[in-house]
Length: 186
Image 1 (cartoon, rainbow, N blue to C red):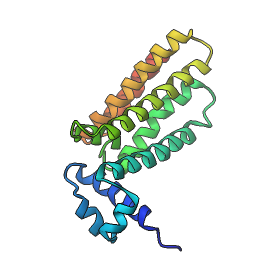
Image 2 (cartoon, rainbow, N blue to C red):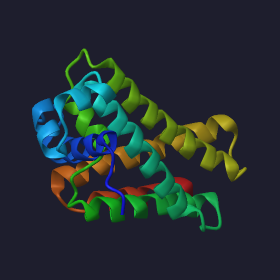
Image 3 (tube, one colour):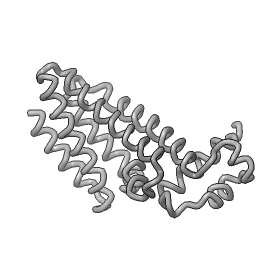
């Protein structure tokens, strides 16, 4: 198997450190040391820790978005797909000991001047919101406005359940949010 390149090692290392130790708690020197790269090599690929975080968030967004879409793809209708989204969240979060969402974690640990990271987080949440709204629209049972409102309600349930699982270190918030979603969907 081919050894990952410098850029990949930096992103892989930073991903682990940012997720488990926190963005502010992870220094650039620790990333360099644990990735086993020279400082000059790191700066050839990334101008700052913020740029590394942006690459990390882009990767996590693509992986998470694809995994969730694949997880719900075989469900017969939009209602079952929406409910399966909660099952995906449960499986994913329990597999990381309820460590939480990389986007929620980093935004709460972010200095105000890190606009590129804030924009990436907002973009990820907006894309997830649009995905849920479009899922509801695909059912054809609601007006566009109703579908968007229902999609927003489901989005808030998902995001709230994610942070509550992290706080509680347990999956009950996701199970509760799924049942609330079931009621909303009728």
